[in-house]
Every structure is written in structure tokens, then in C-alpha cells.
Image (cartoon, rainbow, N blue to C red; front, side, top):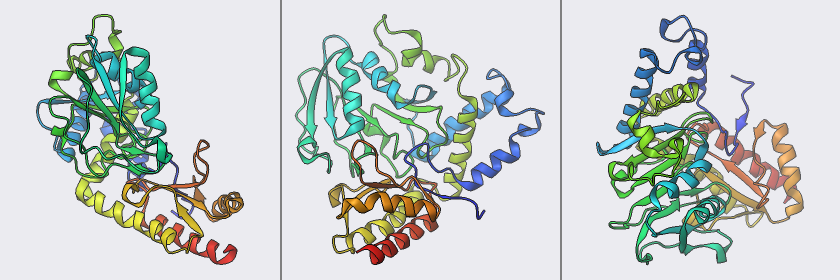
Length: 362
């Protein structure tokens, strides 16, 4: 489709064209039911089947063990910032947080409203340009859990690997890199992710939670903010975001058809390399924001040495069909978010535009 833009938005972000076309075909009449999935009761057999199939696809693609639950919730990762400590930070214990940038800081701020917290690692002195080393984490006595953000969209950093936290549950916000690479789920007690980067449209948040953490919330925690409520009701306690779950279902099938998460990881590395290589060979015209060892393949953040050229870069890129290259307002600069659904061709086109811009303005 020639009128499609090169979409580098940070979220809501690009969705696979094949998925959008399939949804378009099924939009008015889903599965021969004579109505759209959006018009159906979430108590109907058809929707229940979709709900179960989407859970099963998540389990298959991420190799999720049986003693974990897959939940489809609402409220985005921002609600999980509070829901995690409400459920897990009990009995005068301490929540340990790894501070790596904008999103980790927001999660920490919410937890502070609920109980005692401790920062166990931080990259704040480095302006969050890298991920801290977590190999020798020292946890506070009575730690309830360790929380980290696997990928910081604003700073453009990503953890390459995850720490062994022993008997203390590891909790991860994976909103911006879930389904981008294989994971050892058994390392984590809980993973949460807003869908609008790699999984589907906004409106649904996926939670993967281990059995032992899915109960035991204090009695005062409201019904909708308890994990056990959603576990007992298979994510159907109240009306779920049915269309968003349906779209996640299609995206997961697309990932499976592409060869699964390992194949997606390889494709993502190739896409990101196109843009990082242009930054690195620009002779200082472009400067990567993140330290090379912490660079995210999902969110590529960079500056132009002459920062006065950045608004022109954005303006010219938009004329050439690129969308979403302006950096986040809190850090400025430029950012290309190359999530799973961003085609190789878009990344190649961006690298070529960057080279051309450098030749004309360097």
C-alpha cells in the first residue's frame, strides 16, 4: 500500500499490515456470527474461545510454564505500577526498585505511595544512558520483590539479561519489548506489558503471574485491583477490552507465522543495525544517546551534533513519509521506535534518509 507511512511512533505504534487487513475483512462479520467481535457479549462461547486461544498463543510463543497465569487487564502499565505493590508489598516488607529512566521512576513513585521502597541499582548519575549492572544486587532484608523495566522507551536502553533474585520475586515491566526476544519466564514472578508497542492496539495490558503471587493480596485492596479476582474469572470478571484482545490474537498468530519469537529477535537486530550503523559511521554528525552496550533495538535514540538541525530533520522526514521521529519531550533529540511490526524496508529507508540529510547538512 503506497499510502502507508514509515511509522516510528513510540506507542501506540505500528501494527502488521497483514493483521490490519485481516481485521478489516472480519470487522463487520466475525467468524460468520453476523456481527462484529466488538458487538458480542464477552460471555458468549465465541468470545470465550477467542480469550482462551489468545492465552494459549501467549503460552506457546513465550514458553510459559503451567504454574503461571496469563491475564488480560485494563488500565495500561501505569495501573500495574500501583497494582503490583498493592498486591505484593505486604506485611511491613520493602519493595526493591531498579531505577533506569522515565518509566522505572514512575513505577517507583507509585510504589512509594503504598509502602516502603528501596533503590537497589540506578543509572541516574549517567543520565540513564545505560542499564546498571545487576550481577551483584544487594537486596534489603525482607524484600517483597525486585522491580525492573526491561526496556526504557524514552532513553532507548534495554537490559540484555536479567538477574537471578533467588527467592525474591522478580517483577518486570516489559511494555516496550515483550515478544521481541525469547525469555526464561521461570526467572520472573510477574511480567506486565501494555499492548500498544509489540502486541496490539492500546486498551489491553497483559500480565503473566506465578501461582503463588496471584493470591494473598491484603483484604483492603479493591476487587478490580486484585490479581486473584482476574485469575478466578479467567480475565472475564468484568467486560474486557474485547476488540484489543482480538487484535492481540491476530498479532500473536502473525508472530507465530514469522517463525516465532526467536525469528522476530533476529529480524529486530537486523533492522536496528541499519540505523545504529548510520549513527556510528556519521563521523559525529549523529550521536547515539544510549551507551552502546545498553542500546535498545526497540527505541533508537540519538542527537545531531548541531542540535539546531533537529527540528529541520523532523520536518524533512515528515515530508518524506516518516512519522514519529521527534524525541520524547522530556529528553528531546530524535527517536526511531522499530518495534516488531515496523518493516525492514522502513528502517532501510530511514537509514538512507539519515545519510542523505548528513550529506546535505554536514
